[in-house]
Image 1 (spheres, one colour):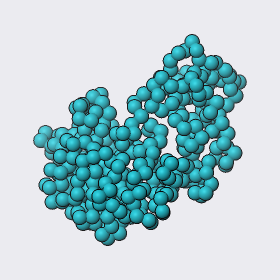
Image 2 (spheres, helix red, strand yellow):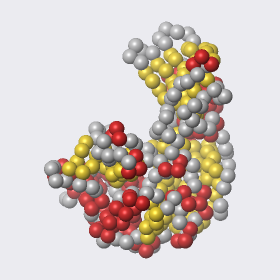
Image 3 (tube, rainbow, N blue to C red):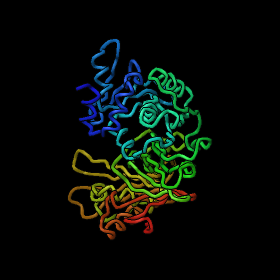
Length: 374
């Protein structure tokens, strides 16, 4: 059994995509040196084709992502402290999950957002024919390398350098849209450029660090869909919220109160609470912070607003009530309590009960069925 077959067998990849995997030499899309990140949560490790060729090839045909660019080309991709990873070859497990979920038919026309190394564009070309694949990449240097990789692999899909939010209207309508970048909000041109009954698959990530594999089906001018497990992708560049998470400031102006709601209870709740917060308290995000002495803090902040509102709820063992500190125009802990109460009243729904609708006015979540908004 080949390394491709072993990987496909391990990941449960279907026969049609295995055939495409065999047609595309993955090693062509991997740089001679890189930083591999096993998808099973293992530690990052450096790979070097010249110094350690066996290890390099093993990484190529493992379920690992490989960073190919950092800080939009301004940082060393091999140095994690040189900035955020901004382009990579995705781990096969999650990449083929999106492709399987997209379920294209023979000769379907596909728009891919985020060419990256060009590997998935090649896979799609092998599956559907290169004339049916349009791939958009925002970064000029990344696009150039992808074009070189694709030529070396023997494929020539239509490559476009441009803003992925706009899609590519010239080749529309598409039967499928495949996004390899996370979005906080689904760009509406993708819906406009998909024919009725067509499918969009995308990592929907409205809160930093929290995302969902999402499959949408277009009808008329609206797309409806559900979530199919967690996802954590690099964000569409124009939708990045910045790297600031919890940043307390103006301590002297903060309000201190108490609550009887244990912050650990909120932090341990199902990810459905996070989805409810997206709709009911837009922009609110929270981080758990356990302490060595058994204490615990839930830190809340506004996404993308370093000088925005913040809050902290602190649990201390033995206390009957817990201190809440809040600053800003929004009282984020109060909003979090309201979201948590809504979630309890609605039978503690998990992500499988939520769905997404994309309209010209933006994204909206629904519960159980599209006609039932939050």
